[in-house]
Length: 248
Ligand SMILES: Nc1ncnc2c1ncn2[C@@H]1O[C@H](COP(=O)(O)OP(=O)(O)OP(=O)(O)O)[C@@H](O)[C@H]1O
Ligand SMILES: [Mg+2]
Figure 1 (cartoon, helix red, strand yellow):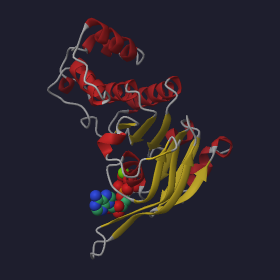
Figure 2: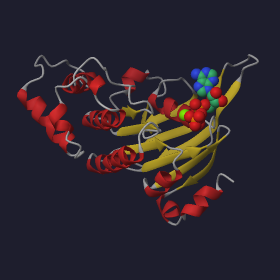
Figure 3: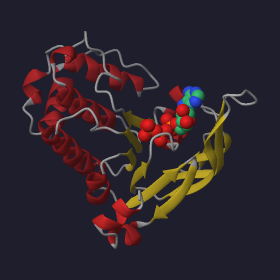
């Protein structure tokens, strides 16, 4: 589903600040896999996700669902790729209501702009999706996004991301700004939504417990290299202590 062939990225090429953030990487992630990406600060995890989303241009080739997307700009890939970031403020507009934010997210994925605005059907659709979070947020659809807590915003952004017809979900430290309880709700919702929508997902996390608990494949980055890649069977055989030992 996601294929990287000799993908590399060097920032500030030919200057004293040159940094090889991604050394040539080959990767083939099957459809509907959920891959967790771990690795120390600066090891290239976010750069890997940015490469797939098209937020940076890279050397090598990136294929999504067999299609070479290397030359496609980020906005052209956004129909294929949904994203969730570390900061709950990223990706939503604080001054708009929850439902208006959903409408914008929906419009972004449509090639022909529908003329119908926010009607009852749309509100009902969103409410039904949001109620799956079991956070009572279906009752807050007409509140300003900025009036909600970070955890609530992050959970809504997740639903927004998966309502789009994208096949891929990229999450970069999605729970880093959340308290333990909100983090758990978000992770459980993510797992459920990934399965229900048959998404192929990649999640960066520093939380090794989450890395162990969620997902069915795991990658470790180090200094721009992908130094470990475990498939479903290998990850299943992993013990929590093994994962901690990777960082020793
Ligand atoms: N836009 C950029 N310009 C210059 N250097 C960059 C840029 N983005 C990333 N880098 C550098 O590339 C390297 C990898 O960065 P990246 O953000 O991918 O790390 P990371 O694994 O996500 O780290 P963290 O866990 O801290 O989020 C770092 O040395 C970083 O400073
Ligand atoms: Mg990062």
